[in-house]
Image 1 (cartoon, rainbow, N blue to C red):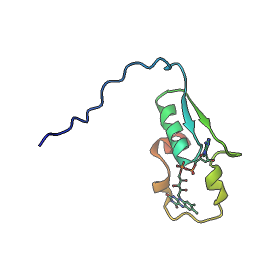
Image 2: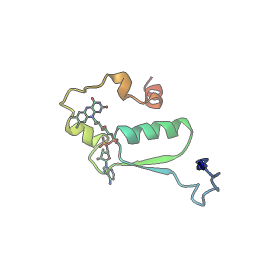
Image 3: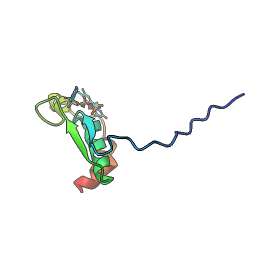
Image 4: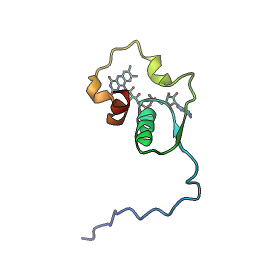
Length: 82
Ligand SMILES: Cc1cc2nc3c(=O)[nH]c(=O)nc-3n(C[C@H](O)[C@H](O)[C@H](O)COP(=O)(O)OP(=O)(O)OC[C@H]3O[C@@H](n4cnc5c(N)ncnc54)[C@H](O)[C@@H]3O)c2cc1C
């Protein structure tokens, strides 16, 4: 049996390294990504098509969550909030 080498090749320095990371969508996942980038000191911009952050979540915000908060909040976001 032959095993496939899944080791990631080292990245060459991209020519657009001076640009910020573009995060598409300010939902829970996009905001968690932003929190991680902030923690690493990496520039980013969040692009949201809705009228505000969390536009999709706000649409059903009247509904009770089925998950406890500790399972919903990303660790990097929690550190910022604290
Ligand atoms: C009624 C309901 C209750 C839920 N309860 C729970 C729960 O208790 N626990 C749980 O873990 N999950 C729950 N979920 C699921 C949870 O909401 C989703 O898993 C979560 O919102 C996904 O986050 P996301 O950031 O990937 O996507 P979304 O929340 O969908 O966010 C995506 C964002 O991107 C924006 N967007 C989309 N397209 C573009 C574009 N082309 N350019 C720019 N912006 C764009 C949208 O406007 C939106 O703000 C629930 C879902 C529903 C519907």
